[in-house]
Length: 546
Image 1 (cartoon, helix red, strand yellow):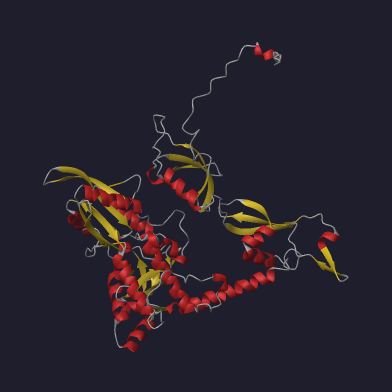
Image 2: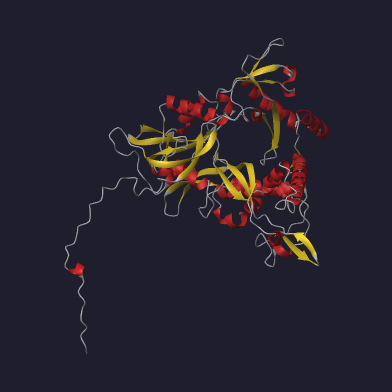
């Protein structure tokens, strides 16, 4: 065995130089949100911003704590917009925004605002442009060399190849080519006309389907007040008349009716109001709802939606109610938006539903369904009331309100809760009925029931003897089944099935005719009902529904 000689290297005898000490890591160094891009309202538009750093308090320490559950994450961040301005946002708002602008694979959506320019860049030869067939030259069907300048919703712009725009936004690209007079160019001529024809077919189908929406559960739903009265006259009943009278008795307080010779004050905008009609699933009750034409008004610069308590918060609160042996009561605000003042200066002309006041001018003094600011107005007004009653919002979920309480029977100290879902109220307290009565002083509350968000609320005893609160969709499902059976009566469905499709069903081999507009509308209604059943807890049918 030969022992190899080891070659000696110079650095074997050199002193090792110690590495320079690294600076102490900051909270931003390993933060998953820092340097991410998000979209938030900025000025009068939605702009893309960059998360720069954590927000620090006066003592220099970062504010908030992280949590694996984004809802419970209380960290605050500074978001910088392209104009250099910065705003503070909570971690859960950033997480929600990131999920909303990405697809399931994490790729970011780009929403098109408009196509603003085009260009053609190509070094193709005649052989690249034409091909020969039987001795004749024909132009190749290609978009090569063409690019469109796309302006996105966040205000940014990008040159995008026509090939990609044609696939992602075919209608917008076709309309742009037609407006610019380049629809006969080689990159457009072979597909633009077909795309616009397809658009016309879509519009015709939508219009046909819209016209058939005047039936629900096999009953006609009127589109005007006059037609509602005619339907009652034809059927010999007063269902729609009673629904209109009930709604108008509630809605009148929202208007300040002017004298015949009096006009609206300066600075007020005209808005057209009207009644919309619906049929509820429970007992086919007729419903009339007075709404405003908020689409005629300019869009507010700030977000105007009414937030709601999360389903996770509801389940946690019910768990605490069971553990602390507390009462649970539900109710909802009558004419919810009418309890909040109108934040817009608008006037309208009253319609025939106002009886003798029809045709008069009136100022809107309360928030109304349809106004773009109505949801936020009601939410802020409700929050002011809760603070006045010494309730505090939870930082993790601002629609959960809490207050320190002591139960007089055993001096047990706990936190009482009020959960708000727009106008639906859930009170958890040792005297929950008292909490509802306190709210009734500021908001007219309807008579309480055992239903919350369509689910039946009840106390149950588990197999181990422990009591718990449950939300069951059973009543909603029973009403849905009853209404569906009534709607589908006479169609000859089998009494027993083992799945939504036959075992030998192949979609690609299905040659049955398409649903007409009315049946398609019924199908969409059924899917909406099934979606809400899944939301209420029947996750066992989620695969069949989705």
